[in-house]
Length: 250
Image 1 (tube, rainbow, N blue to C red):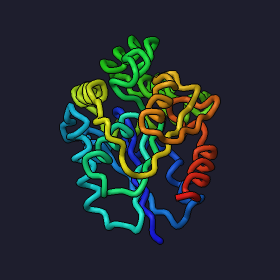
Image 2 (image 1 turned 60 degrees about the vertical axis):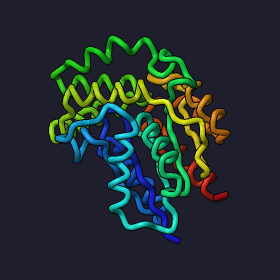
Image 3 (image 1 turned 135 degrees about the horizontal axis):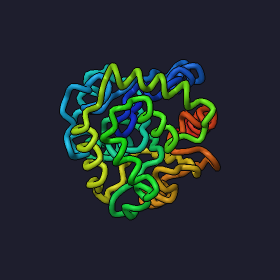
């Protein structure tokens, strides 16, 4: 039975920011095909204007999905803003996919703004929006989102190259921030299996946001005790173990 896994990153991040995780996923699950998606304004679509609503972001991502040959089973694997886009997609087109994994995300109406973006990051993010020093910007993003400082220098250099190749405009960054801030899904739970993954060491989004999301949609949640917001960077093997256990029962 064929499986497609559609990977989607978050705010001002592109498919290249998954780093080695797609490769590790493919080695662990050789029969599952990874398809990397980008939001408009990021990655392959960096020259496009990013809309300011999650519903428009979801419509764009879905067009790439529809252009991909369907497998017997189709999964969404998404983090942060990408997970919000996935939620909207699942609610608007419930027959598109068979299951979804949502990582370190949050929703307006379930969590207060100071949990959705932790206050200690406000000034840093504002400065980063207007910084032209790409390497410094990527190092700061890693400092906030990852709890593996030993790899930050090497990865920040790789991410700087990504930004040079596919620069995200300040306007698109602001549009995506507004989209995330405003998004509030319908109360209807998608009628497919959901798994919530959460890093309890997340210093960008409070971990209780994922707990509230899991409770809201009656979805299982697995928590790593120390990983940060970029869970697949900090603890890729743990993530793969959770996916293996969860998909055995689908």
